[in-house]
Length: 151
Length: 370
Image (cartoon, rainbow over all chains, first blue to last red; front, side):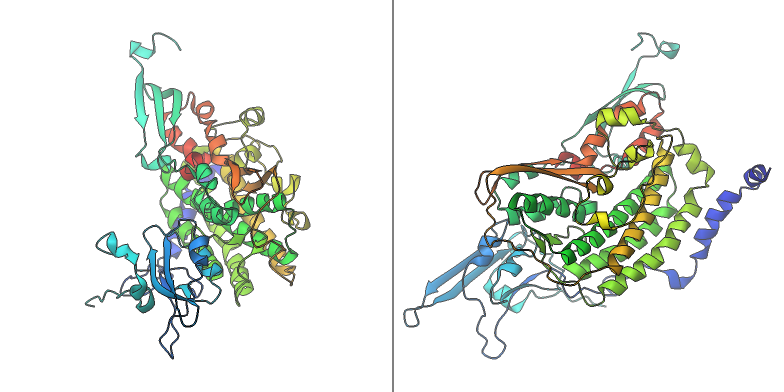
């Protein structure tokens, strides 16, 4: 009997509609107005790569050990180095990072013994050409120029 | 196949997919129709083939770990767990208890996320749009926990061979507990929307029936097998990563139809929350990384390890020739095996039911094609 009444008065449907109706309040809005509203990025987020420099001297922290290039599953890091004749040490000359092939697994970051290579919170990596996705040493050290929006 | 069909109309062969939105990716199903009735189906797969098993042969063991996330991309953490367990077994490495517990928490969170995606898209296929938004909202919370823990949301690469790369972040326990408290009432909400809904019952009940014998014959695992009434869950049958310490039930159905699978998955989400809470209560301290050599070079041998992924039994078969790269990696994906049963479930049903059946198998084409 109760089942029949529920059927006649469409109670089950009304219960479902009531759930939807409960969420009409504006405080339940979850939509984020990107790009006007910036998303909260976690500290450990693996985004755009950066080659850290010593803030006091401006010299790179990278010791050109090539471990990141060996750790990378996609072989997208190319480290160029030359031997300094006076100090007998390897010195970094070029550093190329192809973000178009990168899957941001973080293995290069883990491999780095001096915390020079780091994946940062920056996630806006769009560029107008495929060449723009190949980052050289200057871009890795200074960071990409972020696009400014008029609003 | 009878020669003359109803009204002597010739049979119609219809291509469903690969662009059809309800095939959940790029699955092509060739339907043989008699009017609206399906008299045969054939699956064409391979549109998303990336040769992941072949890639493994050219990568070191550690380098291949990010690739396994890209098979079942809605349950990347489970994939990573299976791969790490397989290589650990090959190496004979013991994983510290803290790492095991954190692995269980993250894997169960991922199981909930995968079931949420399934519930939302399945309801969308059937015609109920509302649950999708609610499911995505809760999934967002899980993805935020993943992002805070390991830095990525979807293809997480959360585990490393031998344990974990990252220690849990400061508010990890509070975040997960807050999610558990918030999530259980939300599951009741989904049930309010769907379980009693007459359209939902009408579309799902007695559609795509697969009984226990057929399930075993086809090798179907996961919620499909449990909905047919078989109490089989690898977390209980062959416990791994410390699952034997946790107390949970295996939800089962009776009919083996789509509606039972829905109920089983809803119950599984509740059980996952139960496991997460137990794991959090007994979260041990200590190291998070086992004794793994710097260069992973397993001895010559082969190993098969399977885990209970959200979609069924996920197995990794790895052959090692003693070098730093695997000789062969074979993956036994649950979706691929479960998809075999599509023809059996669709015969005699209507075209609209094919959509329901594809949805209820819960396939991810990245895993089917690899």
